[in-house]
Amino acid sequence: MISPAAAHRNLLLFVLPALAVYLVFAVLPLATSIVMSFFQTNGVSGDTFVGLANYVRLFTHPTISARFWNALLNNMQYFAIHLIVEVPMGLLLAALLTSGKLARSEGIYRTLLFIPATLSVVIVGFVWRLIINPLWGLVGFPLLGTESTALTTISLMSVWQYFGIPMVFLYSALLAVPNELVEAANIDGAGGWTTFWKIKFPLIAPQFGLIAILTYIWTFNGFDLVFALNGSAPGPNYSTDILGTYFYRTFFGSSGQLADLDLGAAVATIIFLTVLLVTAVYFWLIQRRLKSYSV
Amino acid sequence: MSAPDLTMPVARRRPDREPWTLERIIVHALLILFVLLAIGPVLIVIINSLKTTPAIFDGPFDLPTAKTFSLEGYKRVFMRGNFIVNYRNSLIVTVTTIVLTVVLSTLAAFALVEYRVRVASLLAGLFVLGIMLPIRLGTIPLIQMMLAWKLMDTLAALILVYTAMSIPIAVTLMVTYFQTVPTDLKEAARMDGASELRTFWIVLPLVRPGLAAVAALTMLPVWNDLWFPLILAPSRQNQTVTLGVQQFVGQFMNDYPALLAALTLGAVPLVLLFTLFSRQFISGLSKGYSK
Image 1: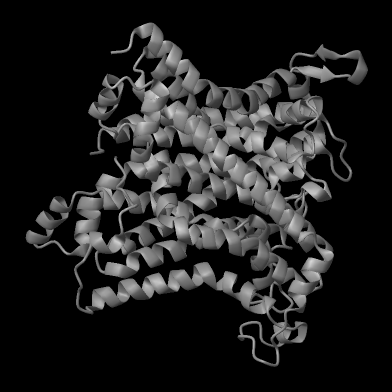
Image 2: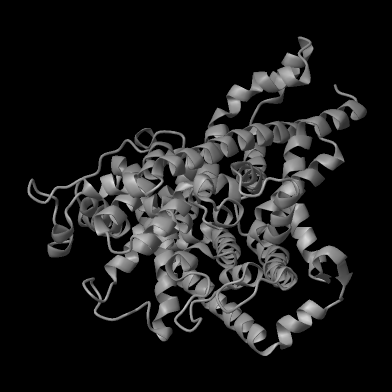
């Protein structure tokens, strides 16, 4: 046996390299960003503590706050569309893949269906812009150029790219359902449909909570596809602006807007709190309840 | 819920051959429909990248014929674009990040499972928390750090950030693999007087599927990221493939063969790699996040 002192020393030696990189390049910048949001950067003369001044500006300045609420609402819609379309699609495909009717082809389907998720947003954005191009594409209507349809269109492009992820989570959960349960149901005369909803579905239910929270985190971190399609001031008339593009514009600047690092730090902190709050609630309430149903 | 091991060949798991019932036909038909939806757009890009401009517009869904086949697009991409440099950068960044992530997270996960002191579960929790951490929100301090350390606009900046980004999920995933290693084996190694590092080496082959899963899982978000290349390494000699294609698309909006060729060149390597490692990737994804 190893002595407690040696165990501590060994643990530290093995974990330190990973921990150091993780703390310095992930945790520290995030923490610094929160601290920064309470300061005003003045170049040479140093930083001054300004309390909540950056937040007051974010929430009361007419254009800044209007754009922020717009981006937040758009982001919620972006998340909702992902959840509403991606999850049923992933469930259907996972159910088909594990229906026991495929034999050898199961792996081929699984791999092909996941291919969109391996593409970069640049390709996804361009391909779909090409397909729905009103000049010679499949749709004779400027879906991306119209305020009321642009955000939904981009969301659906993103859904097309990432439906493989809920599919894989649900697929793995379905494979883990004990075969004896399914066989017992079959002996009792239950068909594929009944077996799925009565036996398999309740067992994979905890996965939906996980998928929902990961989708939430990922969509509130969204930026790439919107930027690739519409740049950092996503139009038309900011109708596709989400928190990621708003944040980028705030600290990086764009046409008609100066770069503002302190305001950017405040925006980052608010986004972080938005993600943190929901994630925490999820872990305390929902995950606990669902755990009791899981095998 | 424990995820099944997908590293096992599919055919061996379900060897039975069923007759062509109506139910079976419907399942296949639906899956084929979704496969077409998934890869159709990709195929359109690849097919049209091999045609002349008029052929692209006359029949966007036609295969290239002897008359319409053309590699002009690819020629122009290599002439005007920066693709060799882009590929080199993406390869350096992705491979170095994978190696660093695999090495650091494997060492950490081994110790977190091996030394059952209270601080170990605390540290493991800290890593799990990192999976949920939106690292992009720390971008402003990252820019200042990279400026201060003279790492701004270098590939090293990207590698460091990506490694930090990949470590939480990698450690969490490797912990699940190390938990399956029998204690007897490690104790036997220690009895023979093996050092801790030597014990680590002895059990390493047993978690090899985990190493592959970590590598596959790390590769995708790093290769496809647009945010950090745009902010931390934007200059022409440091652009990755994703950023390079993005800029190329912006510059040559009307040269369709070249555009489609650039998009194909950006997508194909990763799609091929993924196809090779899809089992590892999928099992890594479900095992790592289902904790």
